[in-house]
Image (cartoon, rainbow, N blue to C red):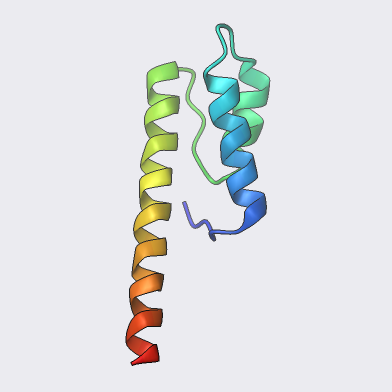
Length: 75
């Protein structure tokens, strides 16, 4: 899961979340989107959503660290 916080990555994650929230998600789309954002595909819907939430948490933590580094560099 080596993902940069760029707009394309975020858009793909948003698409993945939207797909996973459908009553009957297309597993073909889910597989494609999970692969695109660096996640291992699994058929279990709970594991799919868990992987996405974990990734989002990592992205948020990375963003917070970058902001802190910027503030320190500005001082």
